[in-house]
Image 1 (cartoon, helix red, strand yellow):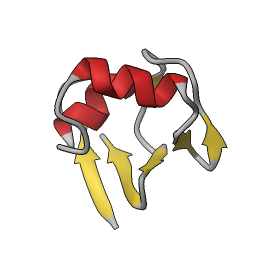
Image 2 (tube, helix red, strand yellow; image 1 turned 180 degrees about the vertical axis):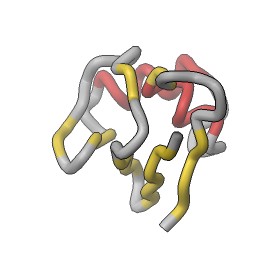
Image 3 (cartoon, helix red, strand yellow; image 1 turned 90 degrees about the horizontal axis):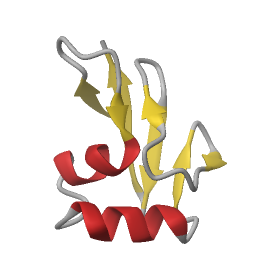
Image 4 (tube, helix red, strand yellow; image 1 turned 120 degrees about the horizontal axis):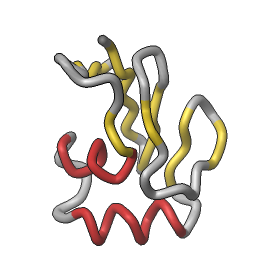
Length: 70
C-alpha cells in the first residue's frame, strides 16, 4: 500500500492530498470530486474539501489508496 508522509506538518487538507498524490490535475478538480462523494477517508465517504487528514488515516479514490504517515 502507498504511503504519504506529512513530514513536519500535523495534517494535510484532503483536496491537497489528492493533488499531491497526482490523482487529479488541480485543486479545483479535487474539490469537485470530494463534493460529489467520490473520495473516502477510513472507509467513509468524505465531502468536506478541506478535511484535515492526519497520520494513520487512509484515503481512497478511483481504485487508489494511500495511508498517511507522520
